[in-house]
Length: 514
Image (cartoon, rainbow, N blue to C red; front, top):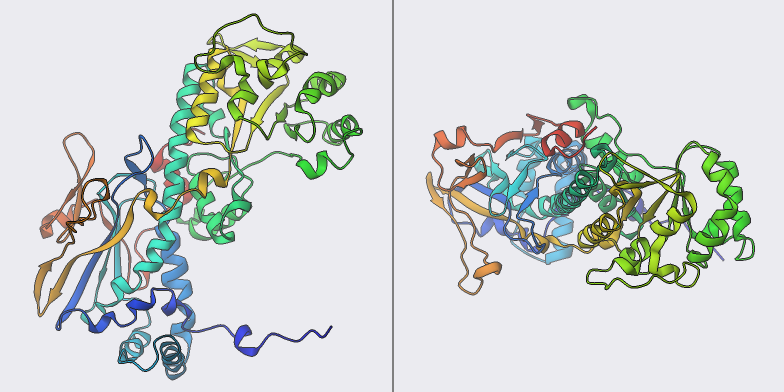
Protein backbone atom coordinates (compact mmCIF):
# COMPACT_ATOMS: atom_id res chain seq x y z
CA UNK A 1 0.00 0.00 0.00
CA UNK A 2 1.31 3.45 -0.90
CA UNK A 3 0.79 6.28 1.54
CA UNK A 4 0.85 9.75 0.06
CA UNK A 5 0.97 13.15 1.68
CA UNK A 6 -2.17 15.23 1.95
CA UNK A 7 -2.73 17.70 -0.91
CA UNK A 8 -1.26 21.12 -0.22
CA UNK A 9 -4.70 22.76 -0.25
CA UNK A 10 -5.71 20.53 2.67
CA UNK A 11 -2.66 21.35 4.76
CA UNK A 12 -2.59 25.11 4.20
CA UNK A 13 -4.75 27.09 6.61
CA UNK A 14 -7.35 29.31 5.00
CA UNK A 15 -7.06 33.00 5.76
CA UNK A 16 -10.75 33.62 5.03
CA UNK A 17 -12.26 30.61 6.82
CA UNK A 18 -14.07 32.83 9.33
CA UNK A 19 -15.82 34.70 6.53
CA UNK A 20 -17.34 31.45 5.32
CA UNK A 21 -18.64 30.45 8.74
CA UNK A 22 -22.06 31.74 7.75
CA UNK A 23 -25.02 30.68 5.63
CA UNK A 24 -24.24 30.82 1.93
CA UNK A 25 -27.35 32.87 1.25
CA UNK A 26 -25.99 35.69 3.43
CA UNK A 27 -23.02 36.32 1.17
CA UNK A 28 -25.00 38.66 -1.05
CA UNK A 29 -27.18 40.36 1.55
CA UNK A 30 -25.04 43.49 1.47
CA UNK A 31 -26.85 44.39 -1.76
CA UNK A 32 -30.34 43.39 -0.60
CA UNK A 33 -30.81 45.85 2.26
CA UNK A 34 -32.50 49.15 1.33
CA UNK A 35 -30.20 51.55 -0.48
CA UNK A 36 -28.68 53.95 2.00
CA UNK A 37 -28.64 51.48 4.94
CA UNK A 38 -25.97 52.53 7.42
CA UNK A 39 -26.82 50.69 10.65
CA UNK A 40 -28.27 47.35 11.75
CA UNK A 41 -29.17 46.20 15.27
CA UNK A 42 -30.03 42.57 16.05
CA UNK A 43 -30.75 40.62 19.22
CA UNK A 44 -30.45 37.04 20.49
CA UNK A 45 -33.58 35.93 22.31
CA UNK A 46 -35.02 32.65 23.56
CA UNK A 47 -38.66 32.86 22.50
CA UNK A 48 -40.26 29.70 23.94
CA UNK A 49 -39.64 26.54 25.96
CA UNK A 50 -40.23 22.89 25.17
CA UNK A 51 -39.22 21.85 28.70
CA UNK A 52 -41.99 21.73 31.25
CA UNK A 53 -41.55 24.21 34.06
CA UNK A 54 -38.66 26.07 32.41
CA UNK A 55 -39.43 29.68 31.53
CA UNK A 56 -35.96 31.22 31.98
CA UNK A 57 -32.78 30.46 30.04
CA UNK A 58 -29.33 30.85 31.56
CA UNK A 59 -27.24 33.25 29.46
CA UNK A 60 -23.87 31.62 28.79
CA UNK A 61 -21.33 31.26 25.99
CA UNK A 62 -21.09 34.77 24.52
CA UNK A 63 -17.64 35.53 25.94
CA UNK A 64 -16.25 32.35 24.42
CA UNK A 65 -17.80 33.24 21.05
CA UNK A 66 -16.30 36.74 21.11
CA UNK A 67 -12.82 35.44 21.87
CA UNK A 68 -12.89 32.39 19.64
CA UNK A 69 -14.75 33.74 16.62
CA UNK A 70 -14.59 37.52 16.60
CA UNK A 71 -10.91 37.61 17.56
CA UNK A 72 -9.11 34.29 17.05
CA UNK A 73 -10.93 33.07 13.94
CA UNK A 74 -10.51 36.41 12.16
CA UNK A 75 -6.87 36.89 13.14
CA UNK A 76 -5.49 35.05 10.05
CA UNK A 77 -7.66 37.17 7.75
CA UNK A 78 -6.50 40.47 9.22
CA UNK A 79 -2.87 39.28 9.32
CA UNK A 80 -2.82 38.13 5.69
CA UNK A 81 -1.76 40.18 2.70
CA UNK A 82 -4.77 42.19 1.58
CA UNK A 83 -4.72 41.13 -2.05
CA UNK A 84 -4.16 37.46 -1.15
CA UNK A 85 -7.06 37.48 1.32
CA UNK A 86 -9.42 39.16 -1.11
CA UNK A 87 -8.42 36.79 -3.91
CA UNK A 88 -9.03 33.81 -1.69
CA UNK A 89 -12.48 35.16 -0.74
CA UNK A 90 -13.30 35.73 -4.41
CA UNK A 91 -12.27 32.19 -5.19
CA UNK A 92 -14.64 30.94 -2.53
CA UNK A 93 -17.50 33.00 -3.97
CA UNK A 94 -16.88 31.69 -7.47
CA UNK A 95 -16.85 28.12 -6.23
CA UNK A 96 -20.04 28.52 -4.20
CA UNK A 97 -22.17 30.91 -6.24
CA UNK A 98 -20.54 30.89 -9.64
CA UNK A 99 -20.35 34.19 -11.56
CA UNK A 100 -22.15 36.71 -9.37
CA UNK A 101 -22.39 40.33 -8.43
CA UNK A 102 -21.56 40.07 -4.73
CA UNK A 103 -18.14 41.61 -5.22
CA UNK A 104 -15.27 41.90 -2.76
CA UNK A 105 -15.03 45.63 -2.08
CA UNK A 106 -16.65 45.22 1.33
CA UNK A 107 -14.21 42.45 2.22
CA UNK A 108 -11.24 44.59 1.19
CA UNK A 109 -12.60 47.43 3.33
CA UNK A 110 -13.05 45.10 6.30
CA UNK A 111 -9.47 43.86 5.94
CA UNK A 112 -8.22 47.45 5.99
CA UNK A 113 -10.25 48.15 9.09
CA UNK A 114 -8.38 45.38 10.95
CA UNK A 115 -11.22 44.42 13.32
CA UNK A 116 -14.93 43.66 13.30
CA UNK A 117 -16.73 47.03 13.61
CA UNK A 118 -19.45 45.73 15.89
CA UNK A 119 -20.60 46.30 19.45
CA UNK A 120 -22.12 43.56 21.60
CA UNK A 121 -24.26 44.37 24.62
CA UNK A 122 -25.44 41.69 27.03
CA UNK A 123 -26.69 40.91 30.49
CA UNK A 124 -24.07 39.29 32.75
CA UNK A 125 -23.42 35.66 31.88
CA UNK A 126 -25.06 33.38 34.42
CA UNK A 127 -28.24 35.47 34.44
CA UNK A 128 -31.54 33.60 34.23
CA UNK A 129 -33.27 35.48 31.43
CA UNK A 130 -37.05 35.18 31.00
CA UNK A 131 -38.37 33.95 27.68
CA UNK A 132 -38.84 36.67 25.05
CA UNK A 133 -36.33 38.94 26.80
CA UNK A 134 -33.07 39.37 24.85
CA UNK A 135 -29.79 38.37 26.45
CA UNK A 136 -27.57 39.84 23.71
CA UNK A 137 -27.69 42.60 21.11
CA UNK A 138 -25.17 43.23 18.34
CA UNK A 139 -24.94 46.45 16.36
CA UNK A 140 -22.74 47.84 13.61
CA UNK A 141 -20.51 50.73 14.68
CA UNK A 142 -19.58 52.13 11.27
CA UNK A 143 -21.98 52.87 8.37
CA UNK A 144 -19.93 50.97 5.79
CA UNK A 145 -20.23 47.72 7.72
CA UNK A 146 -23.96 47.53 8.45
CA UNK A 147 -24.02 44.19 6.58
CA UNK A 148 -21.73 42.50 9.08
CA UNK A 149 -24.32 42.26 11.89
CA UNK A 150 -26.43 39.51 10.40
CA UNK A 151 -23.51 38.09 8.43
CA UNK A 152 -22.17 36.77 11.76
CA UNK A 153 -25.65 35.70 12.97
CA UNK A 154 -25.07 32.07 12.02
CA UNK A 155 -21.86 31.71 14.00
CA UNK A 156 -23.30 33.63 16.95
CA UNK A 157 -26.37 31.42 17.14
CA UNK A 158 -24.43 28.19 16.64
CA UNK A 159 -21.94 29.17 19.34
CA UNK A 160 -24.22 30.15 22.20
CA UNK A 161 -27.53 28.27 21.97
CA UNK A 162 -26.00 24.98 23.07
CA UNK A 163 -23.96 26.10 26.13
CA UNK A 164 -26.85 28.25 27.32
CA UNK A 165 -29.30 25.36 26.81
CA UNK A 166 -27.00 22.99 28.72
CA UNK A 167 -26.60 25.54 31.50
CA UNK A 168 -30.38 25.86 31.73
CA UNK A 169 -30.95 22.10 31.91
CA UNK A 170 -28.25 21.78 34.57
CA UNK A 171 -29.96 24.60 36.48
CA UNK A 172 -33.22 22.62 36.37
CA UNK A 173 -31.45 19.54 37.75
CA UNK A 174 -29.89 21.67 40.47
CA UNK A 175 -33.28 22.86 41.65
CA UNK A 176 -34.57 19.29 41.88
CA UNK A 177 -31.54 18.01 43.76
CA UNK A 178 -31.33 21.04 46.07
CA UNK A 179 -34.94 20.50 47.09
CA UNK A 180 -34.34 16.80 47.79
CA UNK A 181 -31.20 17.58 49.79
CA UNK A 182 -32.95 20.18 51.92
CA UNK A 183 -35.88 17.87 52.60
CA UNK A 184 -33.75 14.89 53.64
CA UNK A 185 -31.05 16.66 55.65
CA UNK A 186 -28.27 16.50 53.04
CA UNK A 187 -25.62 19.23 53.00
CA UNK A 188 -26.12 21.56 50.02
CA UNK A 189 -22.39 21.32 49.27
CA UNK A 190 -22.90 17.65 48.40
CA UNK A 191 -25.24 18.66 45.59
CA UNK A 192 -22.28 20.31 43.84
CA UNK A 193 -21.20 16.74 43.07
CA UNK A 194 -24.54 14.96 42.76
CA UNK A 195 -24.99 15.29 39.00
CA UNK A 196 -21.93 14.08 37.09
CA UNK A 197 -21.35 14.90 33.42
CA UNK A 198 -20.68 11.81 31.27
CA UNK A 199 -21.86 13.34 27.99
CA UNK A 200 -18.52 13.83 26.19
CA UNK A 201 -18.63 10.71 24.00
CA UNK A 202 -22.22 11.33 22.92
CA UNK A 203 -21.76 14.91 21.72
CA UNK A 204 -21.27 15.96 18.09
CA UNK A 205 -17.58 16.71 18.38
CA UNK A 206 -15.05 17.86 20.93
CA UNK A 207 -15.94 21.57 20.70
CA UNK A 208 -19.63 20.94 21.32
CA UNK A 209 -18.80 18.67 24.25
CA UNK A 210 -16.53 21.27 25.78
CA UNK A 211 -19.03 24.12 25.51
CA UNK A 212 -22.00 22.07 26.71
CA UNK A 213 -19.96 20.61 29.54
CA UNK A 214 -19.01 24.10 30.67
CA UNK A 215 -22.71 24.89 30.93
CA UNK A 216 -23.12 21.85 33.19
CA UNK A 217 -20.29 23.11 35.39
CA UNK A 218 -22.12 26.32 36.20
CA UNK A 219 -24.36 24.27 38.50
CA UNK A 220 -22.19 21.26 39.37
CA UNK A 221 -18.54 20.37 39.84
CA UNK A 222 -18.72 16.67 39.01
CA UNK A 223 -17.63 15.93 35.46
CA UNK A 224 -15.47 13.63 33.36
CA UNK A 225 -15.57 16.01 30.36
CA UNK A 226 -12.00 17.25 30.64
CA UNK A 227 -12.35 19.28 27.44
CA UNK A 228 -14.65 21.60 29.38
CA UNK A 229 -11.86 22.50 31.78
CA UNK A 230 -9.71 23.66 28.87
CA UNK A 231 -12.65 25.59 27.39
CA UNK A 232 -13.11 27.43 30.69
CA UNK A 233 -9.39 28.15 31.13
CA UNK A 234 -9.24 29.61 27.61
CA UNK A 235 -12.37 31.73 27.59
CA UNK A 236 -13.31 32.33 31.26
CA UNK A 237 -9.85 32.63 32.74
CA UNK A 238 -9.47 33.49 36.42
CA UNK A 239 -7.28 36.44 35.40
CA UNK A 240 -10.49 38.16 34.26
CA UNK A 241 -11.72 38.28 37.87
CA UNK A 242 -11.92 36.06 40.94
CA UNK A 243 -9.99 32.82 41.27
CA UNK A 244 -12.03 30.16 39.48
CA UNK A 245 -11.27 27.62 42.20
CA UNK A 246 -11.93 24.01 41.30
CA UNK A 247 -13.52 23.87 37.86
CA UNK A 248 -14.38 20.18 37.89
CA UNK A 249 -13.55 17.02 39.77
CA UNK A 250 -13.99 13.29 39.52
CA UNK A 251 -12.96 10.09 41.29
CA UNK A 252 -11.24 6.88 40.18
CA UNK A 253 -13.85 4.77 38.43
CA UNK A 254 -14.03 1.56 36.46
CA UNK A 255 -15.91 0.82 33.26
CA UNK A 256 -17.26 -2.33 31.66
CA UNK A 257 -14.01 -2.93 29.77
CA UNK A 258 -12.23 -3.21 33.13
CA UNK A 259 -14.95 -5.07 35.03
CA UNK A 260 -15.48 -7.67 32.31
CA UNK A 261 -11.80 -8.22 31.48
CA UNK A 262 -11.52 -11.11 33.97
CA UNK A 263 -14.70 -12.77 32.74
CA UNK A 264 -17.75 -13.64 34.80
CA UNK A 265 -15.95 -16.35 36.76
CA UNK A 266 -13.23 -13.89 37.74
CA UNK A 267 -15.57 -11.01 38.60
CA UNK A 268 -15.02 -11.28 42.36
CA UNK A 269 -11.25 -11.16 41.84
CA UNK A 270 -11.68 -8.11 39.63
CA UNK A 271 -13.55 -6.26 42.38
CA UNK A 272 -10.96 -7.28 44.97
CA UNK A 273 -8.02 -6.27 42.78
CA UNK A 274 -9.45 -2.80 42.08
CA UNK A 275 -10.10 -2.18 45.78
CA UNK A 276 -6.61 -3.34 46.69
CA UNK A 277 -4.93 -0.98 44.21
CA UNK A 278 -7.19 1.87 45.41
CA UNK A 279 -6.89 1.46 49.20
CA UNK A 280 -8.41 4.83 50.11
CA UNK A 281 -10.65 7.56 48.76
CA UNK A 282 -13.98 7.38 47.00
CA UNK A 283 -14.10 4.96 44.08
CA UNK A 284 -16.87 4.05 41.64
CA UNK A 285 -17.31 0.49 40.40
CA UNK A 286 -19.54 -0.49 37.49
CA UNK A 287 -21.45 -3.51 38.79
CA UNK A 288 -23.80 -4.72 36.08
CA UNK A 289 -21.30 -6.34 33.74
CA UNK A 290 -23.04 -9.67 34.26
CA UNK A 291 -25.43 -9.98 37.22
CA UNK A 292 -25.93 -6.90 39.38
CA UNK A 293 -27.88 -8.81 42.01
CA UNK A 294 -25.12 -11.43 42.31
CA UNK A 295 -22.59 -8.65 42.89
CA UNK A 296 -24.73 -7.09 45.61
CA UNK A 297 -25.63 -10.32 47.41
CA UNK A 298 -22.52 -12.44 46.92
CA UNK A 299 -19.43 -10.56 45.79
CA UNK A 300 -19.67 -7.44 47.98
CA UNK A 301 -20.35 -9.40 51.21
CA UNK A 302 -17.09 -11.24 50.56
CA UNK A 303 -15.30 -7.89 50.38
CA UNK A 304 -17.00 -6.32 53.37
CA UNK A 305 -13.86 -6.18 55.51
CA UNK A 306 -11.97 -4.31 52.79
CA UNK A 307 -14.86 -1.94 52.09
CA UNK A 308 -15.57 -1.04 55.71
CA UNK A 309 -11.90 -0.48 56.54
CA UNK A 310 -11.32 1.98 53.69
CA UNK A 311 -11.19 5.73 54.18
CA UNK A 312 -13.73 6.68 51.54
CA UNK A 313 -16.91 5.34 50.03
CA UNK A 314 -17.25 2.56 47.48
CA UNK A 315 -19.81 3.75 44.95
CA UNK A 316 -21.75 0.92 43.33
CA UNK A 317 -22.81 1.78 39.80
CA UNK A 318 -25.61 -0.11 38.06
CA UNK A 319 -25.87 1.01 34.47
CA UNK A 320 -28.82 -0.77 32.87
CA UNK A 321 -32.53 -1.20 33.48
CA UNK A 322 -35.08 1.34 34.71
CA UNK A 323 -33.01 3.78 36.81
CA UNK A 324 -35.57 4.41 39.55
CA UNK A 325 -36.56 0.74 39.88
CA UNK A 326 -32.93 -0.40 39.98
CA UNK A 327 -31.86 2.13 42.61
CA UNK A 328 -35.02 2.24 44.73
CA UNK A 329 -36.69 -1.12 44.09
CA UNK A 330 -40.02 -1.86 42.48
CA UNK A 331 -41.70 -1.67 45.90
CA UNK A 332 -41.29 2.13 45.86
CA UNK A 333 -43.05 2.71 42.57
CA UNK A 334 -45.72 5.39 42.81
CA UNK A 335 -49.03 3.69 43.53
CA UNK A 336 -47.39 0.40 44.53
CA UNK A 337 -49.56 -1.52 46.98
CA UNK A 338 -47.69 -2.61 50.12
CA UNK A 339 -47.43 -6.37 50.26
CA UNK A 340 -45.54 -9.00 52.15
CA UNK A 341 -41.97 -8.55 50.99
CA UNK A 342 -40.38 -11.59 49.38
CA UNK A 343 -36.99 -12.75 50.66
CA UNK A 344 -34.19 -10.61 49.26
CA UNK A 345 -32.58 -13.57 47.56
CA UNK A 346 -35.86 -14.43 45.88
CA UNK A 347 -36.59 -11.03 44.35
CA UNK A 348 -33.74 -8.52 44.84
CA UNK A 349 -35.30 -6.18 42.28
CA UNK A 350 -38.22 -5.67 44.69
CA UNK A 351 -35.81 -4.05 47.15
CA UNK A 352 -33.39 -2.26 44.83
CA UNK A 353 -29.72 -1.38 45.19
CA UNK A 354 -30.01 1.03 48.12
CA UNK A 355 -31.89 -1.46 50.33
CA UNK A 356 -29.60 -4.35 49.41
CA UNK A 357 -26.55 -2.27 50.32
CA UNK A 358 -28.14 -1.25 53.60
CA UNK A 359 -28.87 -4.89 54.43
CA UNK A 360 -25.16 -5.67 54.15
CA UNK A 361 -23.44 -2.48 55.31
CA UNK A 362 -26.04 -0.80 57.50
CA UNK A 363 -26.88 2.88 57.72
CA UNK A 364 -26.80 5.83 60.10
CA UNK A 365 -29.57 8.39 60.68
CA UNK A 366 -28.69 11.99 59.87
CA UNK A 367 -30.00 15.00 61.76
CA UNK A 368 -33.21 15.02 59.74
CA UNK A 369 -33.91 11.37 60.54
CA UNK A 370 -33.02 9.96 57.11
CA UNK A 371 -30.72 6.99 56.54
CA UNK A 372 -27.19 7.39 55.17
CA UNK A 373 -25.51 4.20 53.98
CA UNK A 374 -22.29 3.19 55.73
CA UNK A 375 -19.16 3.03 53.54
CA UNK A 376 -21.10 2.69 50.27
CA UNK A 377 -23.14 4.83 47.88
CA UNK A 378 -25.09 4.34 44.64
CA UNK A 379 -24.48 5.92 41.25
CA UNK A 380 -26.69 5.61 38.19
CA UNK A 381 -25.45 7.20 34.98
CA UNK A 382 -27.57 5.97 32.11
CA UNK A 383 -30.64 7.69 30.57
CA UNK A 384 -31.13 10.09 33.47
CA UNK A 385 -33.53 12.98 32.91
CA UNK A 386 -34.75 15.71 35.28
CA UNK A 387 -38.00 13.76 35.67
CA UNK A 388 -36.11 10.59 36.58
CA UNK A 389 -33.88 12.51 38.99
CA UNK A 390 -37.00 13.79 40.74
CA UNK A 391 -38.51 10.29 40.78
CA UNK A 392 -35.38 8.66 42.20
CA UNK A 393 -34.91 11.20 45.00
CA UNK A 394 -38.62 11.13 45.86
CA UNK A 395 -38.67 7.33 46.04
CA UNK A 396 -35.52 7.26 48.16
CA UNK A 397 -37.12 9.78 50.49
CA UNK A 398 -40.25 7.63 50.70
CA UNK A 399 -38.07 4.68 51.72
CA UNK A 400 -36.35 6.77 54.39
CA UNK A 401 -33.03 7.43 52.62
CA UNK A 402 -31.25 10.80 52.44
CA UNK A 403 -30.57 12.23 49.00
CA UNK A 404 -26.82 11.95 49.55
CA UNK A 405 -26.94 8.19 49.04
CA UNK A 406 -27.16 8.59 45.28
CA UNK A 407 -25.17 10.33 42.56
CA UNK A 408 -26.63 10.59 39.08
CA UNK A 409 -24.86 10.76 35.75
CA UNK A 410 -25.99 13.08 32.98
CA UNK A 411 -25.01 11.92 29.52
CA UNK A 412 -25.88 12.78 25.96
CA UNK A 413 -29.46 11.71 26.72
CA UNK A 414 -29.58 14.92 28.78
CA UNK A 415 -27.31 17.27 26.84
CA UNK A 416 -27.59 16.03 23.26
CA UNK A 417 -31.36 15.46 22.99
CA UNK A 418 -31.80 19.22 22.54
CA UNK A 419 -31.80 21.60 19.60
CA UNK A 420 -31.90 25.32 18.96
CA UNK A 421 -35.67 24.91 19.05
CA UNK A 422 -35.64 23.65 22.65
CA UNK A 423 -35.88 27.30 23.65
CA UNK A 424 -36.69 28.69 20.20
CA UNK A 425 -33.39 30.60 20.23
CA UNK A 426 -33.01 33.13 17.44
CA UNK A 427 -31.16 36.22 16.26
CA UNK A 428 -33.42 38.85 14.67
CA UNK A 429 -33.02 42.39 13.39
CA UNK A 430 -35.03 44.99 15.31
CA UNK A 431 -33.70 48.32 14.05
CA UNK A 432 -31.94 49.76 11.00
CA UNK A 433 -31.06 53.21 9.77
CA UNK A 434 -31.54 54.22 6.14
CA UNK A 435 -30.31 57.59 4.88
CA UNK A 436 -30.04 58.77 8.46
CA UNK A 437 -33.58 57.75 9.38
CA UNK A 438 -34.26 55.07 12.00
CA UNK A 439 -36.66 52.24 11.18
CA UNK A 440 -38.17 49.84 13.70
CA UNK A 441 -38.08 46.35 12.18
CA UNK A 442 -39.95 43.22 13.22
CA UNK A 443 -41.51 40.02 11.87
CA UNK A 444 -44.92 38.63 12.85
CA UNK A 445 -45.94 35.77 10.53
CA UNK A 446 -49.71 35.24 10.55
CA UNK A 447 -49.07 31.52 10.07
CA UNK A 448 -47.03 31.19 13.29
CA UNK A 449 -49.06 32.16 16.33
CA UNK A 450 -49.38 30.70 19.83
CA UNK A 451 -46.42 28.66 21.08
CA UNK A 452 -44.87 28.77 17.63
CA UNK A 453 -45.15 32.52 17.41
CA UNK A 454 -42.22 34.04 15.60
CA UNK A 455 -43.06 37.66 16.34
CA UNK A 456 -39.84 39.47 17.09
CA UNK A 457 -39.13 42.51 19.19
CA UNK A 458 -38.88 45.86 17.44
CA UNK A 459 -36.86 49.02 17.69
CA UNK A 460 -33.89 49.77 19.87
CA UNK A 461 -33.99 47.54 22.94
CA UNK A 462 -33.39 47.84 26.66
CA UNK A 463 -33.77 45.41 29.54
CA UNK A 464 -34.83 46.54 32.97
CA UNK A 465 -36.33 45.06 36.14
CA UNK A 466 -40.04 45.37 36.78
CA UNK A 467 -41.68 45.93 40.15
CA UNK A 468 -41.33 42.22 40.95
CA UNK A 469 -37.61 42.31 40.26
CA UNK A 470 -38.00 40.29 37.07
CA UNK A 471 -36.16 41.16 33.88
CA UNK A 472 -38.41 42.86 31.34
CA UNK A 473 -37.96 44.04 27.77
CA UNK A 474 -38.42 47.64 26.65
CA UNK A 475 -39.03 47.95 22.92
CA UNK A 476 -38.47 51.18 20.99
CA UNK A 477 -36.22 52.25 23.84
CA UNK A 478 -35.16 55.85 24.31
CA UNK A 479 -31.47 56.77 24.65
CA UNK A 480 -32.02 57.19 28.39
CA UNK A 481 -33.56 53.74 28.68
CA UNK A 482 -30.68 52.21 26.72
CA UNK A 483 -28.17 53.94 28.94
CA UNK A 484 -29.80 52.42 32.03
CA UNK A 485 -30.34 49.04 30.39
CA UNK A 486 -28.97 45.81 31.84
CA UNK A 487 -27.76 45.10 28.30
CA UNK A 488 -24.33 46.63 28.80
CA UNK A 489 -21.42 46.80 26.32
CA UNK A 490 -19.10 43.81 26.63
CA UNK A 491 -17.12 44.00 23.34
CA UNK A 492 -16.64 46.67 20.71
CA UNK A 493 -14.43 47.13 17.64
CA UNK A 494 -12.11 44.23 18.35
CA UNK A 495 -11.73 44.71 22.08
CA UNK A 496 -13.36 43.38 25.23
CA UNK A 497 -14.92 46.05 27.42
CA UNK A 498 -15.91 43.62 30.16
CA UNK A 499 -14.94 40.05 30.94
CA UNK A 500 -16.14 37.53 33.51
CA UNK A 501 -14.23 34.73 35.14
CA UNK A 502 -15.96 31.38 35.43
CA UNK A 503 -16.20 31.95 39.18
CA UNK A 504 -18.05 35.18 38.49
CA UNK A 505 -20.49 33.47 36.11
CA UNK A 506 -21.12 30.80 38.76
CA UNK A 507 -21.70 33.51 41.34
CA UNK A 508 -24.26 35.27 39.13
CA UNK A 509 -26.19 32.01 38.72
CA UNK A 510 -25.78 31.24 42.42
CA UNK A 511 -25.96 27.43 42.37
CA UNK A 512 -22.48 26.37 43.48
CA UNK A 513 -22.54 26.30 47.27
CA UNK A 514 -18.87 25.98 48.06
